[in-house]
Image (cartoon, rainbow, N blue to C red):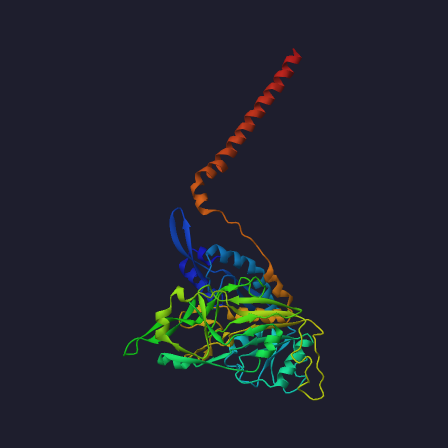
Length: 460
């Protein structure tokens, strides 16, 4: 149904309002026809219904940094996945168990409420303390979301042995601590935060560097510009917008992802483990080592492309294969529990060098969480939630995620060539068929006349 095709304006506006209330958001399309341009509001989405439940499906969503033909192709490739994901949401009954680790200052239910609400449609979530060596045995995936204090060797051992037995781990880590509230004074500091996971992640195939990424493709923050409290939005390179992705199903056709004080990852050589970078910085990025001062005035002066020449920094990566235990050839940290030195099953580890990627903002008026990835200053919706949900789906082995790997190539008409050759093709399609019918008619007439003429001569 195209609501814009409705001639009655009041009915049209009512239909559009209903679609928006149900969760299908419009976009403005510049329609060009006959040399005239017109802005048309379209609703690229659907509403799926099952047993008195409704789920909106948005085919074109988020923030796009590619040209229209590219993101249209990406939207077409994602249609099947989007519809199946909505059907899964409507019909899910048997939820997969996943664990969120607690005890080290990890994100609480308020900070991650938007994402927890989203995955609650598909997963059964439990907060788990690593006090027992069997604490993780029943969980399909374990999430470590922005820890702020150190893990003990016993706790790391529980995570390690879970992985050796075929488990999956998702780490969102911040190797630096930044006090964002200090920015209102024009500066803040980034200092190293050691949570005692570096050796474990290195053993699994990645090094999370103690530096921050600055990217000219970035978000904004409000800064005071006058004595009377006037503010303006300043581009803030420490809030990078990530729109460069690999071709892995987790991130294929993903919209931009919003980062805050992101670090970066290097992959290291490990035997039996495949590594897949997922998210990259833009080509206009650079890194700064800790400890460091973040000064807003200095950022204004140095925000030129010449100073941002370290593109393609890895922000998130996936490792899968048969891992080697951090505790191989070492005594067990837990008395009476033996070490499994090498993985007995294939395992998966995803590492994101930005714990803030899971944190949602809050609406002070309604006191409700804003959607994860929503920027309250620009009112843009980024795809943090989609990225993290896709990652969980892949780690838990959901077959639906592989649908995102399909390639569909659209072959649109060349609109300039079509305009130039418009008259030619109109004549070809309208006049030529008519002439062909006339020619066939004349040919049949001549053949018939010759046939009857031959019969007439034979009779005489």
